[in-house]
Length: 471
Image 1 (cartoon, rainbow, N blue to C red):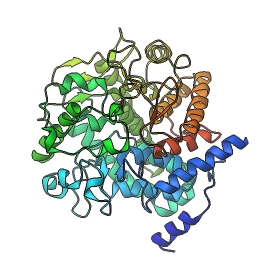
Image 2 (image 1 turned 90 degrees about the horizontal axis):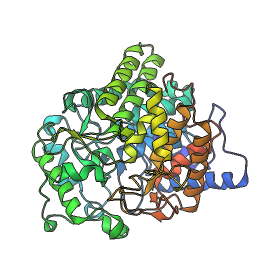
Image 3 (image 1 turned 180 degrees about the horizontal axis):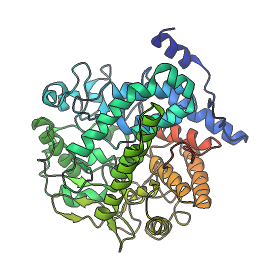
C-alpha cells in the first residue's frame, strides 16, 4: 500500500486510542466521552497531511501547534502523528529554520493575514534557502519538534523503525537546532533570541510592550486584520500592537530574512527551555539511531546553566525575558517564566521557588485560578480575556503539569491535570479560557487543546520518566 492509500485508510479508521506501550484512556464514561470528542476535533481539523489549529481562524499549518498535535495524535494513529511532523519538516528552509506557518494553497488569500503574498518566502527568502514549491512565513516558533518526534517514535517503535521515521527527521531537527544556536544568539551569551513576538508563540504578552515601544507601527490602512472576524475585538491585540507586528515582519522580510539587525530581539525563558528539552530528546533520538547522545545531553545541561545565569531573577522568584537591544531584564511576569520547570538539570532550589511562585498570588495555581494565567494576576496589564495578557492556555498548562511531575510535585500535577481535563471539556476545547472561570475565549474545537487532552487522558504521563533519560 502506498503512502497516500495508507493515509486514506487510516483516516477512515474509527477514532479509538492506540498506544502499544499500553496506555489507555481512563475507564470512566465521562473520560471515554471526552476522548471521543477530542478525537473528533482532530479528525475535523485534519487536512490529509497535517492538522489546522482551527478551521476558521487558523486555516493553515502552524509549527508549534503541529508539534503539540502530534503528541496527542500518537494515541490515535502513530502514522498520522509522524506524517504531521514530516509535512512540517518538508517546508524547512535551507538555513535550517522551520517556518511558523506552512500555507495551504487551497485557502483563499483573504482568509488569513499575513498571507503568503505578504511573506513572499520563495523570493524574499531565497538567499536563506526558502523552499520553492511551498509558501511559508519567514519567522519561526518554539522548538518543541524534537521532543514531539521522540514521543511519537515511542508510541510505536516498530512502525517508526519500519518507516525510517527517526532517520529521516533527525538531520532536519539537528539543522533546526543548529540554526537557532548559531544564528539566533543575538545577545552573545549563548541563548536564542526571538526577533518577533509571534516567534515566541505568546504573541500579545505584556513582556513585549517595552521592546516593541521602539518599533514604529505600520499604518492601519496598510493591512487588513482577518482575526477580528473570528472573535471579539476586545480579546485580540490592539491595532497599535498589530501595526508594530506588521512593521517588524515587513522589515525582516525586506532584509531577506537575515538575523541580527532588527529593532526587536528578546531572550525568552520558555523558548529556550523548550529548546533545551528538545536537545535532550534529540540526544535520545541519536542514541536510538546508534550515535552517541552524551554530547547533546551535556549541551542541554550547559544551556540550562546559561538560562539560569541570564534570565533568573531572584527577587521575582522566576525567569524573566531579556531585552537584548535594551540590555536588561523585562520586569513583567508571564507564564513563560515558569516553563523552565520542565528542565531536569534545573537547580532544586530554583524549581522549588518556581512552584511557590506558580502557587502564589501572581498566578494562583491550585487556589484562585482554574489554570495558570498567561500573565501576572497582579500586573497592571492583566486582562482575563485579552490574547496572552491574562487568559489561560492549554499548552502551557500541559507543560507545567509535566514540569511539576519532573520535580516530584505529583499532587499538584494531578490537580492541574484534573483542572485541565474539566476545563477542556466544559469550554468545548477552547483556544484559551478565562483563568478564573474557565469561560471559553477565541476559537473552539482547537487542535492542540484536543490533542493534549488525549495525552492527559492516557494512564501514563504524556512523557513518562523513562521515555527521555534526562526528562
